[in-house]
Image (tube, one colour):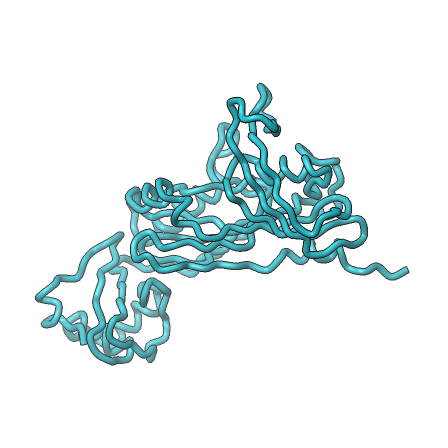
Length: 308
């Protein structure tokens, strides 16, 4: 077991206030914590768990009798601990010493703009990490449009952010969206390729020629057609600003609720676009991280059979 004696060879490593311990023999988590901290009381060890300060293999652990086996890694935050986070604009899906993955609602900005600085995912998460580390902060890795809901990744330090951004195309294995489109799309699947450009009033548009634009590739698969709508899954080969919205409009089947690139139809009071799946290799340990959220219920209701 990784007690104080065993850690003399390699002292626990501090990272974002987390101390790291390697598990060397089978043990229950509570007993491991007691020995790792040189015989602290059972109550003190339990408080780490109750205050959400313990991660096992980078996943939050709160059960005192969780079984540990050799090869696992236990992280303990010696700060005040993370209180259970509640926010009406998003939920935390996953957290470890390096990353936070959230599912944000439609209507929330990823990062501040000239007109909105406080009600953003970035600002709320900074408040959250400072509960346990007054100097803590999160870093933007990628963004979702204000009106798009779904999965977003933030880094907890600049090194992790840089590694994710510099190697984004290699690290991200799968990135999928679900959308409801206006009209019943003709093809079961297809690919849209164009070069995206932005005009003087910041409206993105497609060009079939390379020119000075950025190449954008969107793959789509039709899941269902009904009631004059189409439910589709979309996979991005590139991640350009407003890419999906522009490409669906190019197909003459704009995303429902898209006032900028669509036809003005808004039966559910929001943009019908959701980033539902994200798979990427962890920038530190290389492990494949897979996150998937359900299709928003409002999307499915648009395609339900109506009583006549």
